[in-house]
Length: 67
Image (cartoon, rainbow, N blue to C red; front, side, top):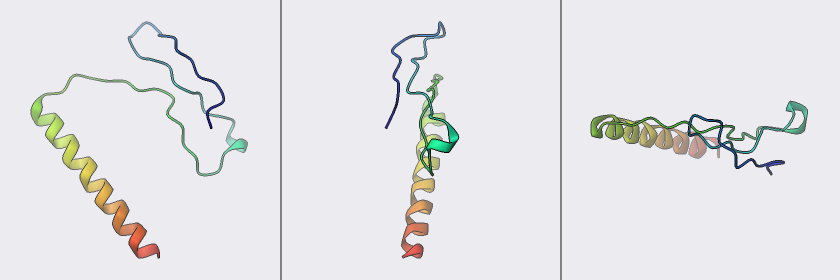
């Protein structure tokens, strides 16, 4: 669970999200510290979606093999 949330902007238009707790307080848990966006062309978007779908498929395959 996030410990602190910040709704501040740091000047570059990015919203600050929950900060990650101390390393000793987590076990295989990841928190998003920051999201930065960049404009994409339609081709870049298509490539990004394809890459994400490939990663998801690989993860699902690994999950099925782990059972």
